[in-house]
Image (tube, rainbow over all chains, first blue to last red; front, side, top):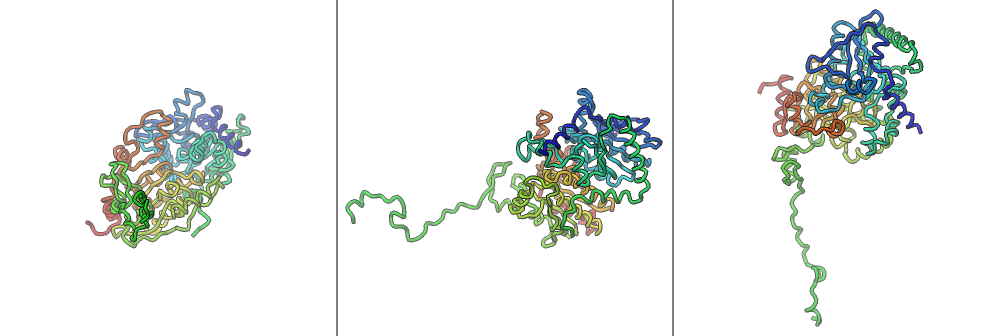
Length: 263
Length: 287
């Protein structure tokens, strides 16, 4: 059955052997310098942000980091950001806007952190503010979904001019397990839910949610990162010369769900 | 008289040959509802007369139409974007049927009602979410109606008042639902950048993708007493963290204490408070 395929991709997207945010930063940029803290509460270890050179151009890089082994994963909260993570990201994006640097985000999360403290510090508000501010951030933004794109927690770094997805990444409004347990009161039907949710890169492309799928065929080769770097350079170049960029970013998201009964 | 008559006792009026007049139906009083807070039974008419509240202060849920009647100046509400309805973008198993069932049960086409109205004599755009329609979940039509409400308000220089109640994004529309969070937020941002006023009233329950988008983006955020407002569901948090949640977790009062809402607004004074706030932002005579 087809449902198995979608859930296989979910498993690949979650596997600990995958490249994480740090690997992409190391592979693509030079002189990465990490900047810490949201200036309000804390420094969130699930989100890494900083400055780097993309070839000869300074850029702001933001990445959700899951970690590779158990110890790293614990320390990184399994890549589930708290509100302070989203606030750090927003601080760095505003800084990028001020200094006319493009922003590149790497997204890999099962979702925003689910906990008492996260609610006490306004998880919903933190995401909402990022959605608002990113929509009008006056500098080019590119987001790449490299593993899991878990709901609002992933969208909070993906209101971008271009959104790419790795071949085996997923992007979904709810986890297949969560969907199955709500709809069928049975989380073991996750594979069926994964199929229904249309969460693969191919689905996202056909729904127009992403611009492009990044092949994982050469993932082990050095060309993988060089090709990605070249793509980023050329896309950022064309975005920075587009006077209509912000209008197009709004229209990009405005277009989803214009139902057939248009006035 | 037959001889055995004195042994025979009729069991009811019919065996006696029936009564000439139908018995008077005993007055059972009007239907009542038990308040989950004070446990008293209250006649429905008294609940309705008090804007769906109990005298102890408990706020029952309200349908969108009831709210519109409650908050707007009489006869000023004009519904808009009514023809925007959700399709089934993912061909999600069972969704179409679910929509049909919910539509006929709730008598509404979608989980939000939008339009223009006056509140305290001030012209404003209004959106009110409907708890009886898939618990106010946000699919493409909800996102589209709210986006159009903001775009219309921006084009016409009007404020927006929004009542939220939602279980979050509607999973049957998958990524298209998720994208509504960005779409509505964009429309709110452009409205805000135009210098216009947006007031949200969070009602029970406001959660998930709606909390993480337009619900929390108001210039002023009010919440109804006791309303549950949060991002992650309380049960999910309890299961993942294996911690006991603090008392009153995610209630409106909890949000006030942590600095995420401006005020708790009981329905008793809500109309006058909303009118006052609109007046302060949109001119009109001082009180």
